[in-house]
Length: 244
Ligand SMILES: Nc1ncnc2c1ncn2[C@@H]1O[C@H](COP(=O)(O)OP(=O)(O)OP(=O)(O)O)[C@@H](O)[C@H]1O
Ligand SMILES: [Mg+2]
Image (cartoon, rainbow, N blue to C red; front, side, top):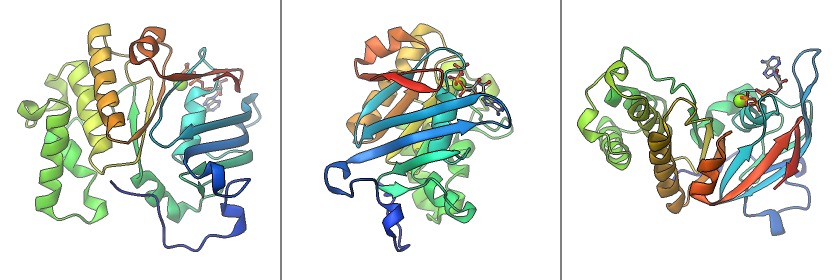
């Protein structure tokens, strides 16, 4: 599995509050995080959250509560106004643009609308995101086949996304998110466009990935999925963690 470790020297400000010690096993640690878009309301208002390495955690809450914002801060799509964010012990709060690719290599992201490239086959969609990381073509192919098998899509590898069902498209997107073997998988409403049967199939894949030590964080409205998986859920309202 790929790690977040970096050759960059770390300073005191890079360490989580309280040092390594009891926090050493946190995959995610957000401390007093605030976020506002433009001149609008605060989308996040002092969020504190810890997710341990190897956990499977749901983020729940009503529309507009701040779930997407919270996840976006974790993979550097947005920046916070205040507070500290650590991923695997590394302070990513004020990450330089040039350090973003390294962060994102360690995080697989899955969206509600799949975001597959329509002009590329399933295989190509998954192989595509390995180009930047310097694996050989042969190793890249091996990894694509391995993740396709894991999401049970090996027989659809040469098809284009438009001929796949929603569930199959989402499983292809999950395979793409996992092909670089990230220690952290983040999914934002990954089952929002799927029927209940397909949604449970997606959760089964996430659970399997989680059993292989990947930390999984899923934002969802769907309480039945949380009950189905049976793991911890963190409830967000008006930009604050109110439970979990
Ligand atoms: N790019 C943006 N520009 C301005 N305001 C935004 C932007 N993105 C989110 N917001 C606002 O921030 C707040 C939190 O939005 P966010 O998308 O994080 O909520 P959410 O919990 O993911 O909602 P949903 O369940 O509908 O996806 C909302 O008030 C929203 O209008
Ligand atoms: Mg959202």
